[in-house]
Amino acid sequence: MSRIGKLPIQVPAGVDVTIDGRTVAVKGPKGSLAHTVAAPIEVAKGEDGVITVSRPNDERQNKALHGLSRTLVANMITGVTQGYSKALEISGVGYRVQAKGSNLEFSLGYSHPILVEAPEGISFKVESPTKLSVEGIDKQKVGEVAANIRKLRKPDPYKAKGVKYAGEVIRRKVGKAGK
Image 1 (cartoon, helix red, strand yellow):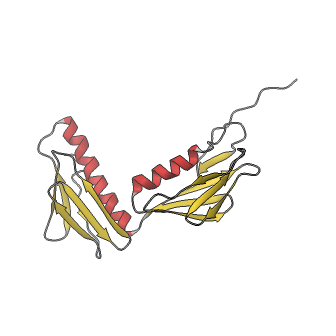
Image 2: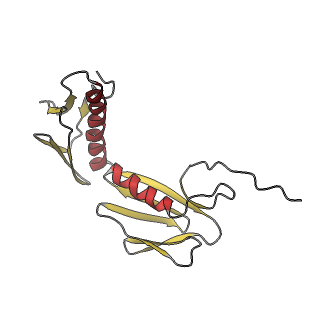
Image 3: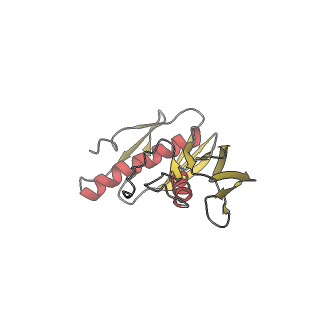
């Protein structure tokens, strides 16, 4: 069995899990999420509130889907209880971010400010003009929005100016040797 897939998922108090065919719906204090599990994988809920994920056979594809499905359901439970957050840092002269309602306005050295709208289920928190965080209950959506913000101005390898994840190490290059 898949080492990850065979682990049971504990459902904390205050979280309601509904399994309807292949669809798993999770409702908690921060919101609700739903996910449709891939075809050969079975999700079952025990009497003690523990969710188990099983597969019909040991085919390579089923092994991969087994661990994936278990992790996606576990991430939904974590999302509706604790939520997810991705921190970003902006470095560079004149590079900054400010909140405009629920949206963000970036000044990243272009001739115009860049406006980023918050998708449904995502919120932005601006701690300072150079630090912000993307928060939400869907781990995949939080990561995708953070990656799209980072893509606006990737850190360059010479001066490390741009938008980067908090704690990300940028590999620096040496500039050309002058005379």
